[in-house]
Amino acid sequence: QVQLVESGGGLVQAGGSLRLSCAASGRAFSSYPVGWFRRAPGKGREFVAAIGYSSGSTLYADSAKGRFTISRDNAKNTVYLQMNSLKPEDTAVYYCAAGRLGGVVLTTTSGYAYWGQGTQVTVSS
Image (cartoon, rainbow, N blue to C red; front, side):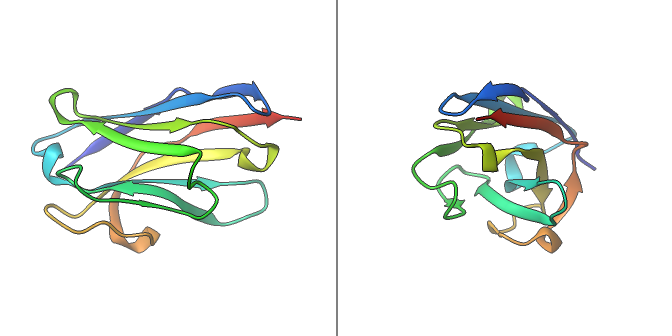
């Protein structure tokens, strides 16, 4: 069992930056792939970025490439999402999710078994 808590969201102007954190409790977190997803008002949950359990593999949505960076500190049981050059269309609730133990990095919500409650990111124009 893995419990996830996101933090770091807030209100920022376009062009600004935020760093989201996903703190995990539970055993063997370092062996889980972790993804970030977001849900904008009136839209479904969409993939943003993901990282493998060894940090050797990362995936990004096209909308995140070049602006967002996912990383993890397994010693702290935490995964980060550094978001730069934020745009109003990045406004959403951001969720982190843990995949299956020892699993591969995936971009679909069905590939993730554990979810946090989300943190709101609002980007003003």
